[in-house]
Amino acid sequence: MLQLKTPLSQTESEMLLQCLSEMENNLMSKNSSSNQDMLKRTTLASAKQKVQSQMYDCFYHEEIANMVFALDSLSRKYNAQLTESTPTETAESVSTALRTVAVTRAKLRQASTSK
Image 1 (cartoon, one colour):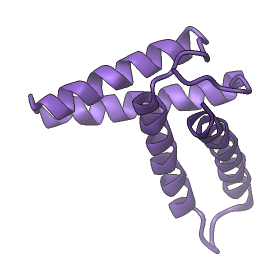
Image 2 (image 1 turned 30 degrees about the horizontal axis):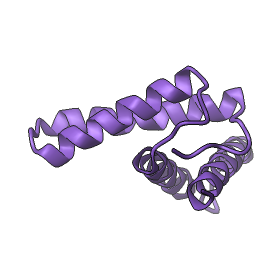
Image 3 (image 1 turned 180 degrees about the vertical axis):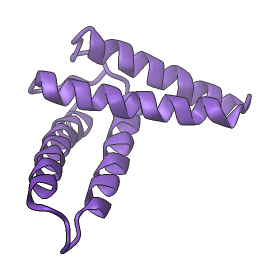
């Protein structure tokens, strides 16, 4: 079992839950009954439940890996929104979200590299 060294803030938890829900919805929309997809859905549901209950000391490696992947996907979406013509207010909002994603991802990666 892996443990987060630094607990997630409320904002970080909410963002992570949003990412996990999106991944879950994407898997469900595939309507696949493969063992791999069912295992991934179970892993996502477990990770989501632990984040919701703020249990940060009993993650499986697969849960952390899926959470990092979800945050990477969100980071790519936010980065795609930033262009030279992005309005200042939007850029500020996106940069705040990117910072939250980066901090959350760093906390998760730190947990996955420690034993």
